[in-house]
Length: 237
Ligand SMILES: *Cc1c(COP(=O)(O)O)cnc(C)c1O
Image (cartoon, rainbow, N blue to C red):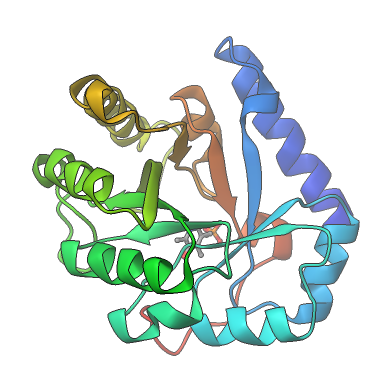
């Protein structure tokens, strides 16, 4: 099936899930997760209506920026980010979804300061406490948000999660609801800090409808748009 048809199908399913939950589909961004895709495929996706691309790997981000692959669309960083690669990402993407530690948070803020800009960020929350995944535990989230609010170089826009792979529809609903509650709690706790938490980045190919029902404002979809990926050499970097 073609890319254009896939985008239309996913967007329709997303809109239906939003409406069924009494939400405005216009509140939910369909981000195309472009890892392993060529610049040409990214250009085709943008021509077919994709407005936001999400990159996992610094190397791919750099190459695709150099070839102008995102022309007409925004680009976000959604993958694991190492402190030593922060300079290749800060200021080059509209939003970093994957701030997963205090160390990374400070490094991103410092680089943004150096460049004289403010980088929009999300905190990645490891809801299921999975060893294999990065992120703050739910219990650490409020302190991390306070740290972000205290650093001039970053603007905290919300939270992101990558729950375990869903097997059945509904499997990840509790995680998505938990992330939403966490965002509400943080916003309530930090009213004095005037933060703009309006992004909940949750939902992938297997569970974006549940995420939409639970309040997602950004679903990150790869294989449902582009087809199955070749195996990656590493899940990190
Ligand atoms: C690959 C990836 C996605 C998309 O995964 P699919 O299951 O292919 O839709 C979303 N978010 C992140 C962080 C990813 O690495």
